[in-house]
Image (cartoon, rainbow, N blue to C red; front, side, top):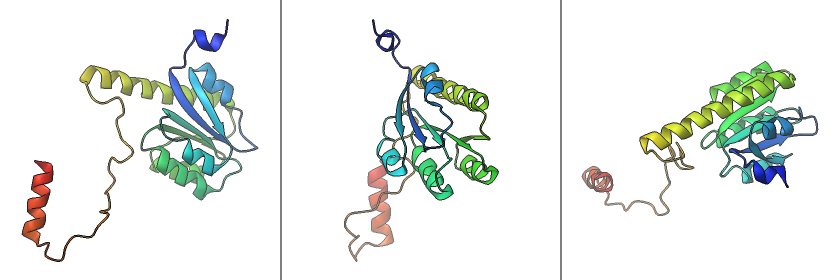
Length: 168
C-alpha cells in the first residue's frame, strides 16, 4: 500500500530552491505538504496558483528575483524565505514573508511548522465564519486597468454615478 495515498496532504507547497538549497523538501512532506519543487524564478511564478505555502531558499538567486517572487506569492499564500542575508530577510519580511537567516535546517523546519499552523488557523476561521476559503484572491487590492479609455465626456458627476452604480 502506498503511504502517500493513506495520508493525504493537508497543504500544498511550492519549494523554490537553487542548486545550493537547504534540502527542505523532506521537511515539508513530513509536515503534511504535497510539494512542487522548482529551481528557477520563471517556473516558480507559473506554479504559484493554488498553493498554500511558498518556501524560497534564496541561495543562488538574486535578491531582486526573490523579492519579486515574494511580492507575487504573498497575495495568495504563506511565504517563508530562507537566506543568509539579513538585508534580504528584512526586505522580505516587510513584504509580509516569514524569514529565516542562516542555514539551520532545524530553524527553517520550525518556521515552516509555524507558517503551516497559521495557514491552518486561517482555514478554520474561514470555515467557522463562512468566509471564503482563500482570504485573498489574485486580484484583491489590485486596481484593474480598463481595456478601453473613458470617453471624453466623462465628467466628475458621471464618474461618481458610475461608481455608485457599480458599488450599489
